[in-house]
Length: 442
Image (cartoon, rainbow, N blue to C red):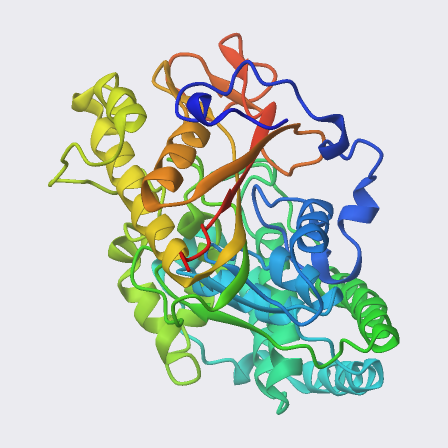
């Protein structure tokens, strides 16, 4: 539905859902085709949305940007369609996952390396394991589980080909939660005291075989379309800072920023970060992230740990109103102000790098925090306009497939489950906000 320009800055609740963008007919296996199912990742958008936007707004060989790259859905779909792409994310785990997902590997090579991995694993002895783990790893994993995971990890480290090694590390990262004391249904760090660890090696091998099947599918698809060598790149970047791109160089931007205080991405991905951090010789950068874990968490856009001590009135009227409704004593107002400040900076950078006449597509939903409606979508549209974009379309879509928790507590605003008497449904819909950078005057 095309919005009149005068209503863009106010309220999207009256919009009618566009059934063509709900993708109700798309089944879960279709959203997890090729490399999309390599690794769990919260709140990721389905590839069908990205695919349609790329087809609508680009041509073969165009350059697509996702400044909040996450697990790489935009980059994978760009490669499938023969579009060059680049993504940014501040999270090194996101970079690891994305680089694995966008890199097809010759299937015969993976077969050979799997056989070598199994031989190396079988030759590993417990007495040869010398990794000293941090207290946080000791908290999450039983000693016997640690020993088995160490054998897998050390066997992976013996792999010489860095792309194959990364492929195996991605699989290792994915199974860590299964093998830990972490409550599987929880999207926050929470111990399950009754959890029984699975067969560790079997769990890893099942997932690596799954990834190999998906890699074969990905490799053959790209080979048949001639897109095996289509350029795509994921960079570790803070997207609130200046983008390392030339002005007017991007043909299309597709992104979905984190929702304010919805997910603590650093917490959710801490297991692989901490595990790699325990090996400072092979993974010195990860060791630095692990040592500076608390300050590292505070750098994420949308984190509740962030504070905005220099808040002013430049965030837009909708953002200012929302902030004024939040209780300062719970630090919500400061963290939401910081979130809107970060999105404003990022949108300004998007405007700089996008070519005139080309589109930016921001996929975002609204939520509730401490009883206050957080109109992320309306604030985003307003900030896009203030940056110079013309809002061409706002699509409201029903969330029938998005991988996101659907319930919050009415009072605290925290995620909860369907058994809670205080539950309320959130994320029933999200919005695809499509803006255009005006053409330069003649």
